[in-house]
Length: 486
Image 1 (tube, helix red, strand yellow):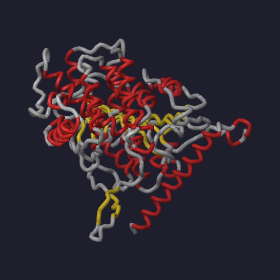
Image 2 (tube, rainbow, N blue to C red; image 1 turned 90 degrees about the vertical axis):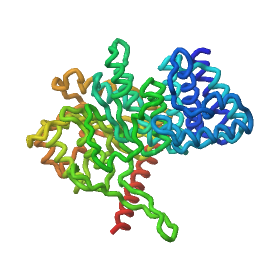
Image 3 (tube, rainbow, N blue to C red; image 1 turned 30 degrees about the vertical axis):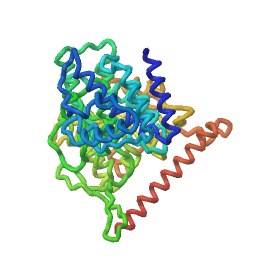
Image 4 (cartoon, rainbow, N blue to C red; image 1 turned 180 degrees about the vertical axis):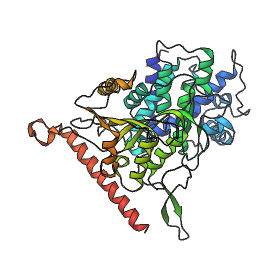
């Protein structure tokens, strides 16, 4: 079967299951379990003969030999048993559940996967298929999966600017489904780039290091990597199921590419003696942090500075409040400008994220030795927000929309940049003299305020109004939560 026919087949089955109330996320989850088992089975055969560490009686052969209710019972037993195994197996099957209630449909899915040879299939085919499902899952707003999904065009642009090199480590402390890892992988294996054996081994086993606390997102990330030939069936997973902010684990990395979760407060839900749920603000007490705060993004920013090597490079998606917030926000910004070389800020347009009402930016900075010197000379700011209108459906963000930014960034030598209408330079002294050392700077005139004949399409305006209202609602919730805690 050719690639497009296989992709179509997998998609069509998804639509069949949707009629039974099985969403993209649940389908993707079940597909992950079954694909992993089938690929493990293939690796156990000639010519590979690998020990997959899957216990006898809980492998692919035990599944495909059954139909109807015996298949359903075997599937449940398999998920439960493998979830308790160590390493990659246990990570993929952690807290796994069967979401396909019709045994006949489960049987058809097993047969569909059994009919193909997945290990011999082109990596791009498997990867594109899975990435496509992840994208569809993110678009399914009811599932809430969009919060783990960064637009692929944005990831590609960030990677093209940072230009990761072979034999270097890449971290993402909130890696979701692995978009940044795949973006870096595609850059490192791009056409025209040949890796030697040592570089390929390093890419497969030692390049990527992530954290993801949501079990399902972590599972999909590991499968996404595995389909791209990253990691081993019987190895340790590249993604830890732990909160990266709890402590400094001591590891240092060459690159950090990340889009930490939106939502201003770090919190955990606690059930009190009366059985009522209470949200408790989490404040991370870390000696390596400049400031103690319950603002999640400010904590992630401080954590990223900690885990970078002295020569490390970072590109991080951050909401607007990180640029202008007072108190701890101001102190952290001033420390960041002193201790790192903060050189580029990309102001992102609205309407590109699945999390509604978010105004975000990409901050690019390089770590520097802790020698007491001020390391930021000045920040170049690119405004991709003013007079730009995007939506998730009718006008999605494409790589072409970011081409001018990549050109202005001048990744070949960023010291040869030139100012343009959208790209301006602000020196260090000018920045620290601003109120609260705010980096929330814009200079372009918003045309939509003047020219009523040239308004965006109604659906774009509608989306922008919704985003403004949701952002305001989120701000009110933060204020209310703050009042309750005092």
